[in-house]
Image (spheres, rainbow, N blue to C red):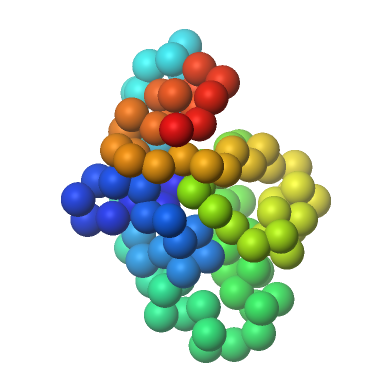
Length: 108
């Protein structure tokens, strides 16, 4: 999920500066790591396809199963769907709490 330095969900998935990866099992957050991805700077540095490929590589490298975000464009949603990723949109507020809500089957 995209996160702000304060630990909230950044509403910009494809233009996020930072992304958090959490490992949730049995509704418990076992691991949390944040990465400086600089997608905010890289978004317009090339083609849309090139940016989507950058995002896809990150997700594959980190072995992500579920993407949690506030919003993302339809082309990104379609790409993630083709990759077999589950996408949960509408998340907001504290990122740590949001990941636990999502693991319980609801975003927010």
